[in-house]
Image (cartoon, rainbow, N blue to C red; front, side):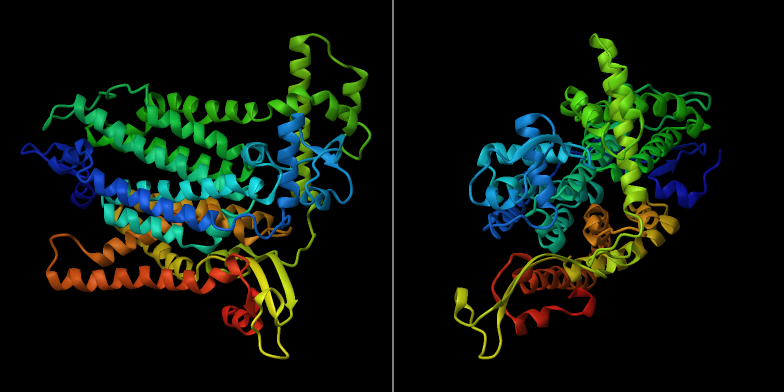
Length: 551
């Protein structure tokens, strides 16, 4: 097969004197390259991660209340921790918990939870360590949100081969309001976003690892026989890590299935491209056998097993669910479990798995049918998520009179406190421009790196359009954020220019990049009060409500 000259150069190949296409010296050098500035890179990564941790841990126990859906997940996590499954609770349980009482509040009736268990187990870890308090049920989110900044830095650095750009990516995530607020709440979305980011990061590392192994087995300047399949690479440690993180992602929220499927296909095409670059013909078909089939174990079977293992508590208490659900409006199959109860280890295991399957059926029906035509004051259209069309008010304390809590409002006015799930406008609006550029660069240059951005945005955003008939919220977009930031980082790299560009070009580029970063930090400081429940006057609050839909 004859490859066009632009494509040969784009994917890092070169032609020999005979016209054979082989990996170029630059590509081989990059595949073999190790960090040339590991100390600076890791010190910078640690510094920005610690800054993110400080911002997310600061005054984490306030407001001292159950904020938004914390009222479900914090108590579900406590039930998992103490009973092995989520239980219903008595009326006014929230008030009792905030007063320091945590016993006698659960009634033994299974709670019909509508999300998988991984994220709630992580919340439970914080509650186990620090108690059933606001700090206890939020600490896990703060830690994961901080680690997410670290992984963002390392992914961006690997993709761009630039420590500077990697650190800029970390700053963009560190100073984003949506990521900050979700890192300070016991909701599930920050965990899903973290695991998806980790899965894609490991997948990119696996791409480099696989190509390096191929390059080591193909002598420099040589080309495989056209009929060759290339070396078989069965043991792929980064791919194993990818599967683990995909399992944790879908074990937190089912919506991670969409990126898992899309990136699984992309992984196959990357493998095919690697083999084609070493001279393998019909690489896509051959890679389907030699790479994609073994990959099913890594990114389908393994995630499925991890997902199933996350329901261990449910499986051990399946009989309790069968007993309870047989007296509800859910499917008639629940009664049959009581009439034909299994005995013995394997019959009981099979019955528990069938019960879990029917439970998933009912949960899916809840999401797709029960919530249809329901409304919520903060629901939003997914089409507008990337431009911050409708933030979510998590908490507010209004009409704080002058002199109360230190309110310094003028006579006749009041103060307030608010926690608003709103992204940093500079980060998100610049990212929209970067997303458009990524499409053009991916199509025009055939640069695989922009494919990560475009596919990542599409598969974490567009599937929500199917569910715009029920209440969905803009903060679901935090899973999109890593791909938006990666696209922004690469656009900033384009603006900065190549290292061998003229001094004037680099100076102009550095000024432009610096302006984006500085504006991000200024915007972060401006919106900080309404992200972290600070006391401000009504006038100061209105100055931050740039659009009516933000109110």
